[in-house]
Every structure is written in structure tokens, then in C-alpha cells.
Length: 210
Image (cartoon, rainbow, N blue to C red; front, side):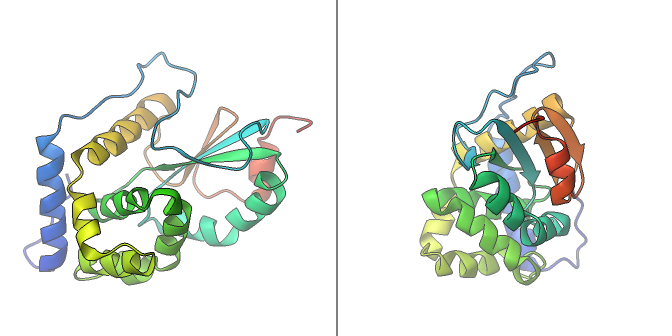
């Protein structure tokens, strides 16, 4: 559990306290057992690219992670154009929130429905403005409003116990199955690599001939 000093801004404390109360009120769902070797997929998974692509790239990220934001800005565009759009690979996006603010942003992105990839992109591009804001909930609401989600919708989203269950379950499973403990972490055709990766590093992990 993250410790917060008495001097921490009220808005951040309010959001952290709100999310912790919800998380404690809902039992955690644990993922696959330690012997699991196949990725089972999750209802929350968002997949980019063609469903029948021969290569699978899974990205675990936290929306408050600056390394993840840099990958999104500098590497992902080429991954999309050269691998996803060409049918060579598909990419599964999985939140791995490292703090309460990242959890709130991830929940809002999921509550946007099919706008999830756009919300993730927007949160990464504006990370500096909301991630360390004195009142992160208000800052998140500002970003959400630009995507067509009003304040009352954000409040309802953050009160969604099932959403917290699902995000926690998938995060716990990532730790058990792939030993994920930092972001970004990638699983490329079953090979786990932690930390920022260049486009060439990702390509080197793809199945030969694809």
C-alpha cells in the first residue's frame, strides 16, 4: 500500500481513499494457477489488428508510467503501421495500474466502450497534466469530457465494483503467469520482456518467417 504524507493534496487523497474503499469492499479475483502456460484472455482485453494475425504482442502498461507514454508516442505508431495494419501481428492492451490514479484513468478508458484505444492515447499524451495534478479526479474528468464522457458518467464508472474486480484479477494473473512487476512489460509470442522496447527489439521476438 502506498503511504501518503499529510501534506498530500486533498484531491489526490480523496481519490485514493475512494478507490481503496471500493477495492476493500470487493474480494479480489485471482487468475490462472501457477502451472498455467497458455494465455487465457480476459473480457477486458482490447485487441488491435487482425484477429487471425500470426503473431501476438501483449502490452502491460500503467497510464501514469512515463516509459509507457514514451513507447506509445515513439514506438507504437510504427508497430501499428508495419505490424498491426499489415496483418503480421495483433496487439492486446492490458492495464497494469501502478497507483490509484492510473486505476481511475484505466476505469474511465474502459467505460468509454469502443473509444478505449483513443482514451488510452489521450491519457498518455496528456499524462503530465493529469497524472500529477493536485486534484487528479478533476483532471481526469476534464480529459474524459473531451471524449464525450461527462462528470456524472465518470463518477458512475469509478463506482463500478465489477470493473475494479476485473482489473485487479487480470493484474494479479499477469504477476502470477508472466511475473509482471513493472511497466511496460511485453509478452511477444509467449516471450516476456520487461522495460521499453524499440521497434527492432519487438520484431526480433516475432516468429521467424512471419
